[in-house]
Amino acid sequence: MSDKAVQKNTSKKKKGQWSEVWRRLRRNKMAMLGLTIISIFILLALFADVIADYDEVAIKMNTSIRLQGPSKDHILGTDELGRDIFARIIHGARVSLQVGIIAVGIAIIIGGTLGAIAGFYGGKFDNIIMRAMDIFLAIPSILLAIAIVSALGTSMLNLMIAVGISSIPSYARIVRASVLSIKDQEYIEAARAIGAKDTRIILKHIIPNSLAPIIVQGTLGVASAILSTAGLSFIGLGIQKPAPEWGAMLSSGKDFIRQSWHVTTFPGIAIMLTILSLNLLGDGLRDALDPRLKQ
Amino acid sequence: MHKYILRRLLLLIPVILGVTFLVFTIMYFTPGDPAKLILGESAQPAQVEALREEMGLNDPFIVQYVRFITKALTGDFGRSYSTNRPVFDEVFARFPATLKLTAAAMLIAIAIGIPVGIISATKQYSALDSISMIGALIGVSMPVFWLGLMLILVFSVNLRLLPSSGSETIKHLILPAFSLGVGSAAIITRMTRSSMLEVIRQDYIRTARSKGVAEKKVVNKHALKNALIPVVTVVGLQFGGLLGGAVLTESVFSWPGVGRLMVDAIRQKDSPMVLASVVFISVTFSFVNLLVDLLYAFIDPRIKSQYR
Image 1: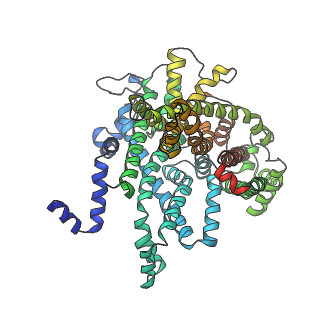
Image 2: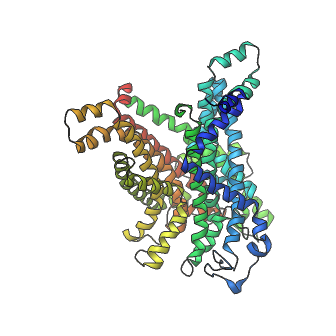
Image 3: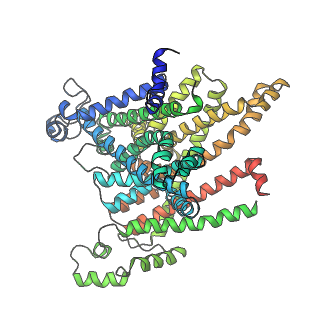
């Protein structure tokens, strides 16, 4: 073992664990490809305003240049109202990534808490919570999201809530399962023996040790949340016009599919690349976080 | 086994009740006054109030729910706010189209997924394996409605081979079923491959090979039979995804199923119709999941023996 490695081991243990995960993730070419693509999308979303002005390029109609194919001025062409498709895609990335990440955040917080309570306390709590989750699971998640959005009304926040709520059960199940596998470990017993309270045990011991499956499911979950968001917008229940959103762009481009191919092609490719990269990254994280695969 | 089936059927009752309660609650809080919706904008407040009273909309939430559920048990889900026809009849009339689309998509998914998965596993790390794994990766990443649009672009607009909307002939079914099925095909491919790879390393496969059984027979008989058990579960789980995806696919291809009925109903704020559609699809989904679990128990002797 080199000096460096020894040094690493003696430094803070937590940091060591994560750098080990990163080292393993870095060796996975597909995961790195995913990480690269999603980073590009995140950067484009962050600097969308710098690259293309929202009001002038992404929103303002310019019917004299409507439905133009890709060219030097508009690398991905223009849509039916003469708006630059590339500009709309990068501003749309902002919407999709925000909704995807916050929706998953909502699902992790609510689902994770429910799952932790169910797993930690067991018995009656477990029964009530998990039966409620069964009911949620009995409704295909996109249908549940559709129903919630139609009740709350269409806005970005409601979309996040709807997509988030409809994916609560999967996080509840995952957290419950990992809590169940952790709670009888000796270090939990030790914590209890020195008088730690339940909340402390859950927050300090159980949650950090069940992070791995949540991270994996969360990464894959952002992908499916983005898909749901695009689907909801596609049927007119998501982000409202004229705001650029990938699903909504496809929905309005659909009417012009016979005249111009590019209007429906590029926003879809953006969705596909985002989902693909998150899936690659999620799969890679699963392998990197799995201690059984440690060499 | 009978006991197990009966127990599972009984367990469905609370789930279905829960689903109706959940969806009823969501619909209850949907803004907009149904009485106003039925009478139109020009209605007098007194008229609206009278209709509200008649429809029982002034009753407490729980009274309304109990009334809804007792009626629903007899197949009465109320009347559509826009057509005034019983919603159950309308949903039921549209259901065969959705079922046809979903079943066709499932068949396509299985017909692609299982053979490709087997080939991928038996020729692990070959070019064929890489191609099908990349294909599967792309397959799971494509939004179903976008794939539908791309298929329309290629096969309807450019090649003029297949129709882009309608449901009259089998030709109309090809594009919607394919776009709906591809995602599931990808998932089934991955599952078949990994399950096959696991089984191929088992001792009994080595035994079969060493006693001279032909490789083809080893794969088709010894390995496949065992590898397919987890695949069955995935197929069942996919069914729910397909029912959900059908809502989007039906919108793309103007397919006259429950999904499109529901999307139209949402636009018209026709809550009874939305409620009935969601409940109908969810109940179907629950029954399919039950069937899959039973099938699972049936094909896996290890589980079957527990319930003898």
